[in-house]
Length: 128
Image (cartoon, rainbow, N blue to C red; front, side):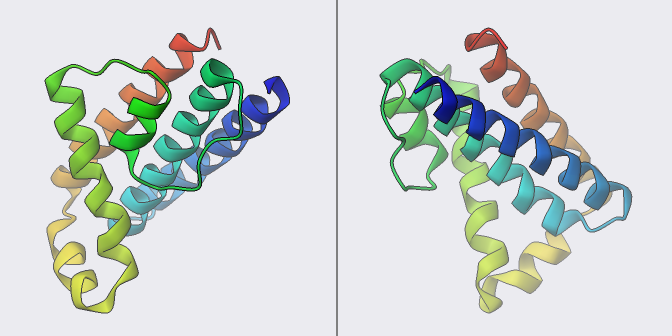
């Protein structure tokens, strides 16, 4: 499963670069959506690394962490649960505009910075 984990890590790194570009371009809603993908892919890498199997085809960050055997403190658990909403909010037109309005510089900067912190923490857990 090493190649599976490497695939997910490589894909997450690429998406992080995309999210950084979106942040600099002030496309804050899409930055957070791609940030969700970064964490999803990194958690799938953890799953492949720690469980030794193909990760499940799900998008729920909390569920992926639990299935990968990653212990989360309450703050990280709550944060990942809130990041899950970014995945839904950008996909459906009735949520999109509300999410777009919510994604100010401050909101995005705070959440994106926290996403990058979780990303780095997960990489360290895999010794990457």
